[in-house]
Image (cartoon, rainbow, N blue to C red; front, side):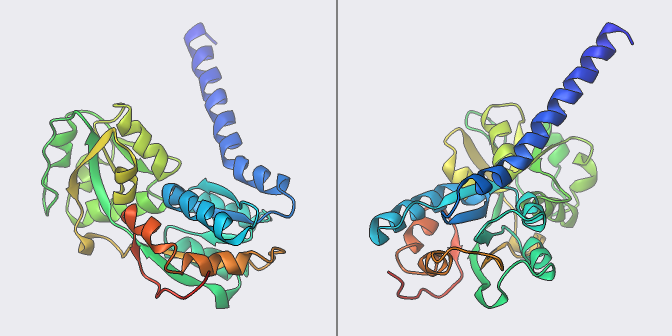
Amino acid sequence: MDGSMRRRTMRRRTWLGLALASAAAPFATARAQGGSLVIFAAASLKNALDEIAADWVKSSGKSAPKISYAASSALAKQLEQGAPADLFISADLDWMDYVAKKDLIKADTRINLLGNKIVLIAPRDSTAKVEVKQGFDLAKALAGGKLAMGNVDAVPAGKYGKAALQKLGAWDGVKDNIAQADNVRAALVLVARGEAPLGIVYSTDAAAEPNVKIVGTFPDDSHPPIIYPAAVTKDTKSSDAVPFLDYLKSPKARPAFEKQGFTVLVKSNSAT
């Protein structure tokens, strides 16, 4: 094995080790928290959910929940492996359906909580101009660069993005030039740092990152509806799981979701 090949092998092993450690992190964190309320939530929820959790602590006097953010696919798999989470919020229906079929949630607690949109973003100082429509030439707009997306086979934002590009006739032109990320926030970072000229993320992610700008919005009919379901897990031992889910449905949580650009789908209740 020559020197260059050895270096490439070492880089691959290092990358794999980091990827495995990253995937396992929420699982390990959850196990370390003892009796605290543990929430598994899609990465795109971080800004809104952090704010809501802080408000809930102030209003209820409860201890702060421990929230693990990652791709919905990774979190669902961790639940399947026995991760002791109390509440799961997915960025799509598919992964909630997956854990439901595994009998990992309490079906009577499941709700469709939020809606979202996917957008095309560029670095803040980019001069890119893209009209997202049927037949648009995304490959030309990339100009040889990579399109940052969540994993198109597993991460909800990636799946929505691929579906939209296929519907609009742009997928074949870019499918070999995609930088696939472990979750939507990682795709956002690639664009924010200028490592990718364009990316597909949720509109809420774009709103949370000052170093990117939206250059196009995908039509709602170009992809399946973007719905965030939430449910209490089957094996929860926390008495706070249902009250926190009720808080997410309450009028007190709505402003934080809407400020980030989410559409609140559930009718507000009067939870304190």
